[in-house]
Length: 54
Image 1 (cartoon, rainbow, N blue to C red):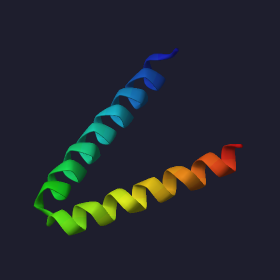
Image 2 (tube, rainbow, N blue to C red; image 1 turned 30 degrees about the vertical axis):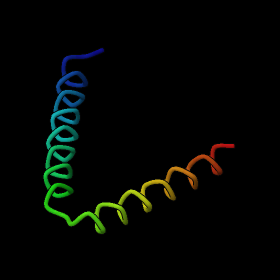
Image 3 (cartoon, rainbow, N blue to C red; image 1 turned 180 degrees about the horizontal axis):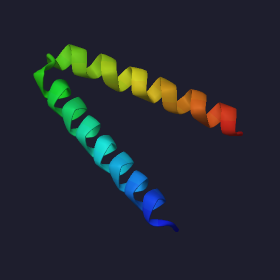
Image 4 (cartoon, rainbow, N blue to C red; image 1 turned 60 degrees about the vertical axis):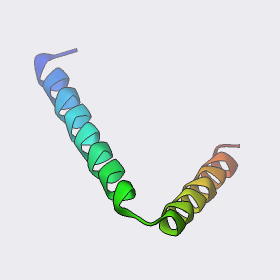
C-alpha cells in the first residue's frame, strides 16, 4: 500500500474514532427513555442491513 493511502486510511480511522467518542458522549447525556429509543433505532437499522445483505 502506498504511503498516501496509508495516511488516508489513518486519517479515516482517526475521524471514525473521534465520531464514535462524540456519539458515546452524546448518548450519555440522554435520558434513559431517549437511550432506549436510540437502541430501538439501531436495532431497526441492523435488521434493515441484514435484510439487504440476505
